[in-house]
Structures are given as structure tokens and as C-alpha cells.
Length: 78
Image (cartoon, rainbow, N blue to C red; front, side, top):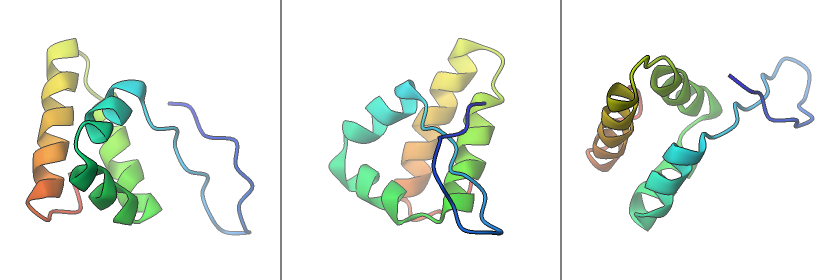
């Protein structure tokens, strides 16, 4: 898991870098991408950590699809 190089205020955690496959999935649907940007940094980190935890490529792909459907349904956590 790579952390983005971003200066943060004291007490804040750096934002986790958005994986390329998730970035492409979000870019494919502007509504989903807007919902993603509306999440808190901790919620985004939870989704990214959950996706990065997949051991099989099929599981990772499925988790990205689930992430997009959860965001579309108004859910804000994996």
C-alpha cells in the first residue's frame, strides 16, 4: 500500500494513493466519481484497503465493482 506524498496538518493521516484500476472504474462513471470525492478521507482509505486486501485478481475486480455499486446505492463504507 503506497501513501501519497502530501503534506498534512498535525494529527491527519496522509491520503492513500488511488489504485489505477479503481481510478479507471471511477472515471468511467462521473456520478460515481463525484460520490467518491464526497467521501471522507477515512472512508476512501477503508475502501482502498479493502480492495488492496484481495489476493486474487478476480476478487479485486469484484471488490471494485462492489465499491461502485455501494457508492451508487448511497453507502459510504465497504
